Image 1 (cartoon, protein in one colour):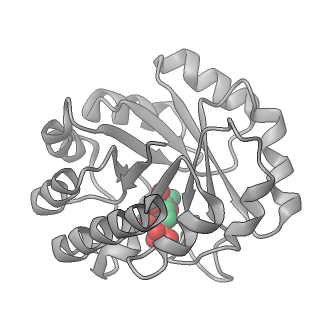
Image 2: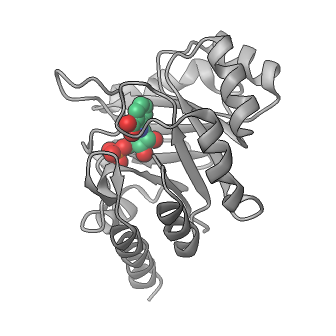
Image 3: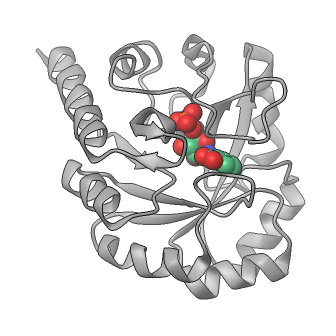
Length: 219
Ligand SMILES: O=C(O)c1ccccc1N[C@@H]1O[C@H](COP(=O)(O)O)[C@@H](O)[C@H]1O
């Protein structure tokens, strides 16, 4: 089975180069002003050019209004929108039609019952992402480096297209792959030396850990 790997929160050419060299299938840009990973749409548009033909460029937004989304789509030309807020199924459908782009809807989870919240989005969202709930007091809906109990994903339909996110790093990604066997994974703070500062060496180390885990499973 192929495994999609999204490196999120890219802000520099060096981090982008490391993500692509490692074999990222997706690269993500954060358009949430309070995030240390925020980039301007035009800068994301410049950075994402390196990914063209190699990885899908994902615009991560949080309950963004149409005016901001228009600016992001025009400036960055994403391949996909990631909706990381409280967007309703109707809003997801509206944005798909407005921009003609696939949408990945994020749901924050902490227990098996949370998984049920995908139901109204099935047939509307193109893909799902399961992320941990933000810790109390966090200003960020994602990018908190917090993991959830990956075993709750084993109750999902086998064909569901999703990414596992939240608190991944080189040390724990093998466990995540073994326990949940997800079709995709997403990482941000686990490959940073400080909030918002991607470390190319940590990105390389993460890809190495993924390869080792997959080789071990195949053996
Ligand atoms: O990373 C952010 O700052 C962020 C801000 C607003 C919405 C989403 C954000 N990040 C997303 O959360 C995942 C998980 O992050 P982490 O690996 O736990 O640090 C990240 O990959 C983004 O998709």
